Image (cartoon, rainbow, N blue to C red; front, top):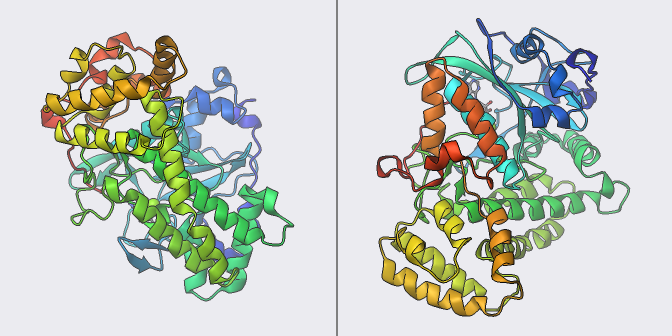
Length: 478
Ligand code: AMP
Ligand code: MG
């Protein structure tokens, strides 16, 4: 299928007008297509070979309207850093419609009713980050929004300095957030709350429609998915940075990438977001905040389901989280059997990593080839004695494995990525792009989508992060 043959649908607009604002994108000056993602084109049923760059550029810039498209921004509220904010909504995102089960959305395409003081824009820096990281997360098996393409422009956008305006075309099976439900609950619009819950069932949980406790089942599923999502973040050292309830997806995927980071050296209290002085959204707070956010969602759903029932589903969160995390971490260690004290072994490892300032990604990758010789691993730590002790325990634990050493290595090399897109790596691509060279963005897209493969030209990115770039904090401005 070609882009101009596409017909979009807009089921969200069947809801009453309080749910959205129909608004046209405001084009950027001199748009330029920076990158196209063939994998996502295929997801949408588009033939990458038939994609016309000019058409795609126009689609992202809002000057090509596909058949059936009726652009709109969605209304939502949210708890930001613990405080309820009634009026958020898509202040700089505009939905185009749905295709093949994916809701297409432009981010940075101008003001909407929900923009408040904002300019409705996104800068090239943050757009490159979102574009690449969503593809990296997906390749790591972590549920996430995706991205089809990215344009830059000559539009000047004011942040701490003047930056280039850009637009990402991103997509998700649903863009409903915890904060979407909160909006209608806190304005006492319980009929609309019910309509939203029905819409969400239709869109994402049709298996529960018609069952007696459909809303409860939906909530239970959101609890499970959120717990498992955050377990997967923890397993790869991902820090989202802004886990406000308006950034929490009702289908348990990662959305709204801002000052996120893949940790460099392991640091349990790491805070990627420069503005988060208290560390509310630090790495080790993420599981707890996931629970807190689900409590806000349960509260918002309380006109539809009794508190007791919601609460009893919420109580499953810890189990879902722990089971998933243990499963993911066992796989990272290549353990194919389960022992009761595996959690001790893992806890000990995380403390060894923290004390030895170990860079997680090269560590697990190196461990994936471990067969007794410890030199390469010991070279990664500042506390070799502790790691040695831990490896003694690991050696013993491995004797309980049923797979051969070769099988374990193969499985671990498919589990422990050689590449994660650390912030300094993204920044190199951003620096080049701001100078008008987009080659590195496209190189990183390939690496992001194939993180377990060797990329011989980019061996440097697989190593330990240079110390001057380690665990920096990022500004929220985007
Ligand atoms: P975020 O933390 O980026 O997810 O954004 C929080 C809220 O602020 C959302 O309602 C966004 O739509 C809105 N917002 C962020 N940046 C802008 C901007 N430049 N213009 C308008 N609204 C914005
Ligand atoms: Mg947001």
